[in-house]
Length: 121
Image (cartoon, rainbow, N blue to C red; front, side, top):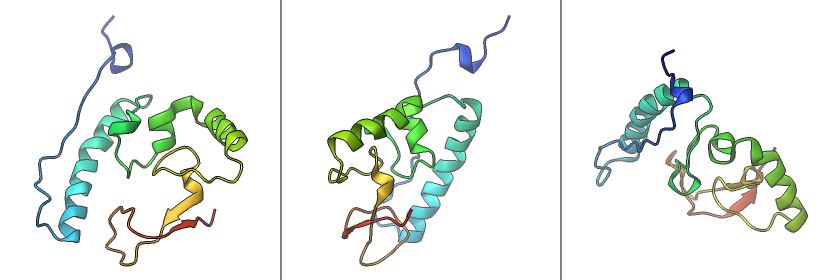
């Protein structure tokens, strides 16, 4: 029987080779959109795949599953028990969907440069 991607343990690093230095905000968005063309093909081919949290894309659309898998719900419970005020924050960290960074100027790019505010869930 031939192997499928689900039968093979695989590690891949994906890099989009655009030099972002000097690009406009729109140029960076365009480069990231092209990167996502490649990533969406990989996501479709590996529906149970994941990503290393420390190497992940801050704009990963399904980051909870990609970084934490089936453990995410339990990790939220643990975080809530140890951090009931939801004080500790990291971008795409457990519970971070409760927060949003409000950039002083919105260029449509991910940033941590601005006040951290409660998200409207």
